[in-house]
Length: 529
Image (cartoon, rainbow, N blue to C red):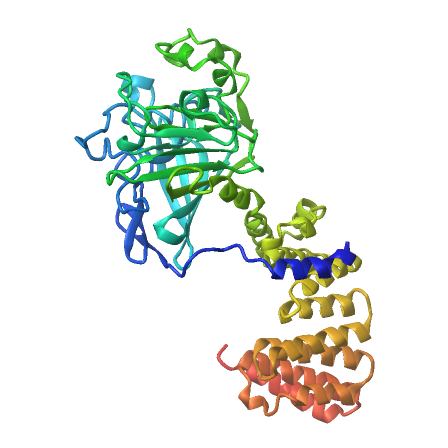
């Protein structure tokens, strides 16, 4: 593995992926919604109080107008059909979750039960070059908890007011299993603006839109087909062509997913309705599915049912691309390829396990993953992954494995002093190689440029510890003394430096001086307690 790391790092450094400008995403929590703006212009709002379930509305397209349907939030918009009121702009729903219909979410008069999604808490809301919103919802059936949902939305501005938006969900079962039934109505849905649809619902009146999937199926032929992505494009209110492409991530259940794509403006990624999509689209017209009817063969076969076990989790990742032009002009295929290769989700999971100090779980889950196979555009992500895994191997006393990962991290990112520090610590504490550890600590110090910041101080403290253990006390004291007067160092680091001096002086036999340093450290630590 190591023989390919240096040329791989060079290749990675030569390529840049981003292609996005210095636009700023701002997220603001209001009383009943969360507002998302780009450079002060509205992009969308997460509305979580005005209906029985949350949804994103409006979704402002690259030409400045809403590109999802306005109905029923706003009635009477020209070109819009006032059907399927539950197709609210952009949302995730399913029509059979433990028997509850969260797709209709109409109340007892139609489904015979209530189904609603309520905000539990906001975990994170971040503004900046990209925006991120993470929140938890409670899915309730007749008032009782069915599951908990963690939603992650990420907003990535592109040029010409185009946008990438990640919509990731985690469904957490509680003390009972959760069944997602085989139904055609379910998944991440978007109802496009009326001007963008292919044809009018029921009347068949033609509009200017097109449905195209990654396999080349168009319009009605795209319904029920499996595909990596589907793009729904057509004229917005200004008459210019725009599109909403939805991507299914390769890590998802039953990738590539099935698509409930309707020519009247609906696009849904549904991986649960397998038996329904095996039937011709026309065979569903006029057929009432369960729980309100029993004439649908797919409702009886239920081959697409999926159960999350007790205390289990189902994770699904999606990306939407709001773009100018048709699928060819927007290069949707290339955008999907970038998304399929993106490994940032792996880093998020690794960081979380690392933060929770679930070290065994981390190395068990990611121990066999080959980060050298990651796309060349993601050198920093690969280096961080090597570092996180290597650091956890170090703490678990698996020094050889840690050394392989940490050597890979510093080869990929040779100017990251923190990676050199971790390599040095593992080399000294687990591999007992003082010479290599000192070299790594010195590298970290050189990268830092000296001074009294955390990196040079950490490098000096680590090097002094190695030198004292080798009885090279004079060299240890010299390393510590390069930081000058201790009064110039922040308190927490001054305490550590005093104790390091005390340890070196004690090893040199200067007990009185060592004791004075330890006492000074203890007195300083007690101040303010």
